Length: 88
Image 1 (cartoon, rainbow, N blue to C red):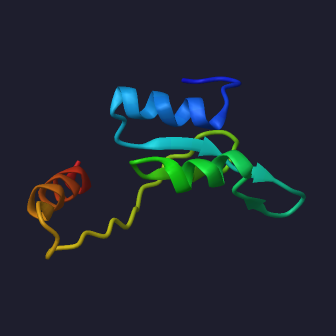
Image 2 (image 1 turned 45 degrees about the horizontal axis):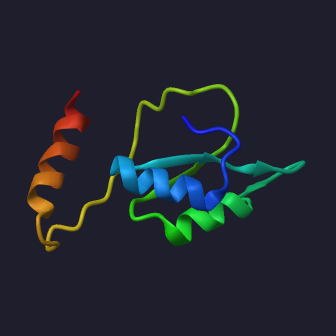
């Protein structure tokens, strides 16, 4: 967890730790939410996916859709893992 860090410093830390996923909070308005400046910077500069999440209490989602690309190089392992997680 990184607090109050410059966006470039966060990307450097993500690279140093070889992170697989980055989660950042969305900026929320009255009736909508959107990616803020830092989230947009991270989406453009991170070597891994950036998940922008709506702040608030955590929810449990009993049904989730996960898409996989079967033709992608190395995709078979990812597909197996997604299917295994879906059976849990």
